[in-house]
Amino acid sequence: MSQELTLGIDLGTTSVKVVVYSRAKGEIVAKQSKDTQANVPSDLGIDGNKQDVPKILSAVHSCISRLPKDLLRQVTTIGVCGQMHGVALWKGQRPSADEKAFKLEIPKTEVSHLYTWQDSRCDAEFLNSLPPSRSHLPVHSGYGCATIFWFARNKPEKLSKYNRCGTVQDLMVNLLCGSEDVAMSSQNAASFGYFLTEEGKFEMETMSTSNFPIDLLPKRILRPGEIAGHLMHTWFGIPEGVPVGVALGDLQCSVFALLKGPDEAVMNISTSAQLTYVQPTFKPGDAEDSATVEYFPYFKDEYLAVSASLNGGNSLASFVKMIQQWTMELGFSVPQAKVWEKLISLGQEDSAISSMRIEPLLLGERHDPLKTASVTDISLDTLHLGTVFRALCSGVIQNLHGYQSIIHFFNLVLELTFS
View 1 (tube, rainbow, N blue to C red):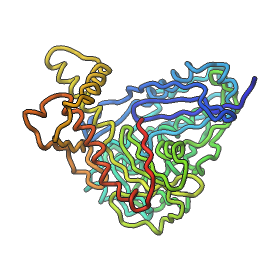
View 2: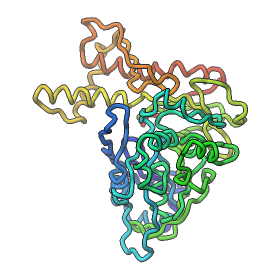
View 3: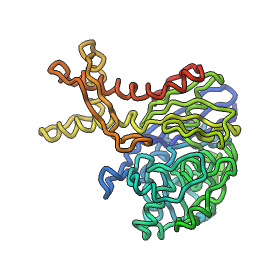
View 4: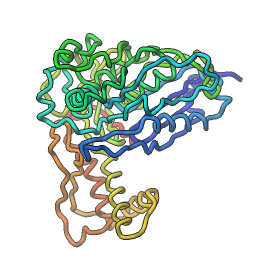
């Protein structure tokens, strides 16, 4: 029996997830996920953070190919979300309409790396040199417009190769639809910086006077939920012409899936970590000068109050990577999955409880980029692997406790999500 299904795609920082959702049943009927393993070493060392875009698209292709074909033939809409703030640049050109086999890909010569939200090439001195923005949202390192400003001043030859830019999810929607112009939601545009949310446009004049290549920016800014285009070719059985929604921010989508009432908040711990709630009455002119709370576009002209930490699951992943590196230097190799399994097992033991405190701020924080990680209360009793890992996990959670004042102030109920 035929049913109307939605294909949902999430392009995360470390993995791609896809689901087929039955709107009639209100449930997921099929799903797949795959680690992208897309990180690329940067010539800036730890200050740079970039990913291989073709690898990300290949992970999507792999996930879709493993979904049941009978379900894909019933897909009537496609929704996409993904990691915010980061920017990819590409050479846009309309694909041939007579292509028989559509594959979600773009030649490496026609796309830059994805410079992610974790990129820290824009230090405080550089950010202070940028033109003042009228937006209620500040510009941080890792934001698309800040990164492009950096390239315009330091490596302009990189920008000359391309004529489009957007988040990686904007690029994917552009490829699916074969559009000549790029559509971007207000959610992703706000995450780029220099975006006026009430007017729904970038600060073109402000940026152009400082030699920002404004021709790169998306020309169509759409409201969340609007259609960016239609699937240009049949894709693993999904019919040609299926509407594709404008790409959304992953934070907004994770919150939307969890909140059941106006008195709830969400603590999301994934690669990074956020504490957030919906603020339906907020207006950009009402924004208070807060170092830790920012207001991003949500749905239906509402805003999300967001306290975001750059340090979440990435701190744990860095610890695992460090252990792997140490074991290799000692002459043997341990698979990553085995390291995780052992750490979790040891960390759950009662003997792992200690007074050790770890501040896992490897990436600093947006409001304090020079902040670093630290360990205190080390003793002979705390030099066990499980003890250290448990203290690290506690540190990630403890770091968010400083943001909980907004929860208590608005008398909200907290929902937790881990991804």
